[in-house]
Image (cartoon, helix red, strand yellow):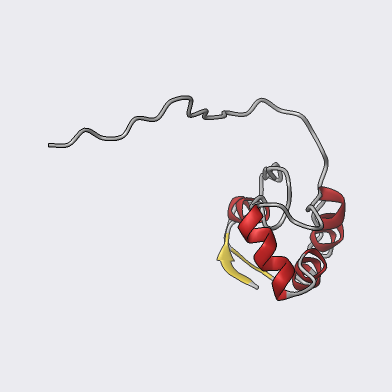
Length: 105
Protein backbone atom coordinates (compact mmCIF):
# COMPACT_ATOMS: atom_id res chain seq x y z
CA UNK A 1 0.00 0.00 0.00
CA UNK A 2 1.20 3.49 -0.82
CA UNK A 3 0.17 5.92 1.94
CA UNK A 4 -0.48 9.64 1.44
CA UNK A 5 0.49 9.88 -2.23
CA UNK A 6 -0.76 11.94 -5.15
CA UNK A 7 -1.91 10.35 -8.39
CA UNK A 8 1.16 11.90 -10.01
CA UNK A 9 3.37 9.99 -7.57
CA UNK A 10 1.41 6.78 -8.22
CA UNK A 11 2.07 7.22 -11.94
CA UNK A 12 5.79 7.74 -11.34
CA UNK A 13 5.85 4.63 -9.15
CA UNK A 14 4.07 2.56 -11.80
CA UNK A 15 6.44 3.94 -14.48
CA UNK A 16 9.53 2.38 -12.92
CA UNK A 17 11.23 -0.31 -15.03
CA UNK A 18 10.41 -2.95 -12.40
CA UNK A 19 6.70 -2.33 -12.93
CA UNK A 20 6.13 -1.40 -16.59
CA UNK A 21 7.94 -0.70 -19.83
CA UNK A 22 6.39 2.72 -20.54
CA UNK A 23 5.91 6.01 -18.74
CA UNK A 24 2.49 6.46 -17.15
CA UNK A 25 1.09 10.00 -16.97
CA UNK A 26 -1.71 11.26 -14.71
CA UNK A 27 -4.41 12.84 -16.87
CA UNK A 28 -7.22 12.55 -14.30
CA UNK A 29 -7.05 16.13 -13.03
CA UNK A 30 -7.75 14.77 -9.53
CA UNK A 31 -5.81 16.54 -6.78
CA UNK A 32 -5.17 15.41 -3.24
CA UNK A 33 -3.38 12.76 -1.24
CA UNK A 34 -4.55 9.17 -1.21
CA UNK A 35 -3.81 5.86 0.46
CA UNK A 36 -3.53 3.53 -2.51
CA UNK A 37 -3.92 -0.20 -2.00
CA UNK A 38 -2.21 -2.10 -4.77
CA UNK A 39 -4.09 -5.40 -4.87
CA UNK A 40 -2.47 -7.79 -7.26
CA UNK A 41 0.82 -5.88 -7.59
CA UNK A 42 2.78 -8.42 -5.55
CA UNK A 43 1.33 -11.26 -7.65
CA UNK A 44 2.20 -9.27 -10.77
CA UNK A 45 5.79 -8.92 -9.56
CA UNK A 46 6.00 -12.64 -8.66
CA UNK A 47 4.96 -13.56 -12.19
CA UNK A 48 7.75 -11.37 -13.51
CA UNK A 49 10.32 -12.87 -11.13
CA UNK A 50 9.24 -16.44 -10.29
CA UNK A 51 12.17 -17.00 -7.93
CA UNK A 52 15.12 -15.23 -6.35
CA UNK A 53 17.53 -16.55 -9.01
CA UNK A 54 15.40 -15.12 -11.84
CA UNK A 55 15.20 -11.77 -10.06
CA UNK A 56 18.98 -11.70 -9.45
CA UNK A 57 19.67 -12.55 -13.09
CA UNK A 58 17.23 -9.88 -14.29
CA UNK A 59 18.88 -7.27 -12.05
CA UNK A 60 22.38 -8.32 -13.19
CA UNK A 61 21.57 -8.33 -16.89
CA UNK A 62 18.86 -5.66 -16.96
CA UNK A 63 16.59 -8.09 -18.85
CA UNK A 64 13.45 -9.50 -17.25
CA UNK A 65 12.35 -13.02 -18.18
CA UNK A 66 8.82 -11.61 -18.40
CA UNK A 67 9.00 -8.04 -19.72
CA UNK A 68 6.43 -5.76 -18.11
CA UNK A 69 3.72 -4.34 -20.33
CA UNK A 70 0.71 -2.11 -19.88
CA UNK A 71 -1.54 -5.07 -20.65
CA UNK A 72 -0.18 -7.08 -17.73
CA UNK A 73 -0.46 -4.06 -15.41
CA UNK A 74 -3.98 -3.09 -16.55
CA UNK A 75 -5.88 -5.46 -14.16
CA UNK A 76 -3.95 -4.11 -11.16
CA UNK A 77 -4.82 -0.51 -12.04
CA UNK A 78 -8.44 -1.28 -12.88
CA UNK A 79 -8.96 -2.55 -9.32
CA UNK A 80 -8.29 1.06 -8.26
CA UNK A 81 -10.98 2.37 -10.60
CA UNK A 82 -8.38 3.78 -12.98
CA UNK A 83 -7.77 3.04 -16.64
CA UNK A 84 -4.63 2.86 -18.76
CA UNK A 85 -5.04 4.24 -22.27
CA UNK A 86 -2.00 3.89 -24.56
CA UNK A 87 -1.11 7.16 -26.28
CA UNK A 88 1.79 8.75 -28.10
CA UNK A 89 3.18 12.06 -26.89
CA UNK A 90 6.40 14.04 -27.18
CA UNK A 91 8.92 13.35 -24.44
CA UNK A 92 12.19 14.88 -23.31
CA UNK A 93 15.10 12.47 -23.68
CA UNK A 94 18.63 13.11 -22.49
CA UNK A 95 21.44 11.49 -24.45
CA UNK A 96 24.98 11.34 -23.10
CA UNK A 97 27.20 11.22 -26.16
CA UNK A 98 30.59 11.91 -24.60
CA UNK A 99 32.29 11.34 -21.26
CA UNK A 100 35.68 12.56 -20.07
CA UNK A 101 37.49 11.66 -16.90
CA UNK A 102 38.02 14.60 -14.57
CA UNK A 103 41.49 16.10 -14.73
CA UNK A 104 43.74 15.78 -11.69
CA UNK A 105 44.22 18.88 -9.55
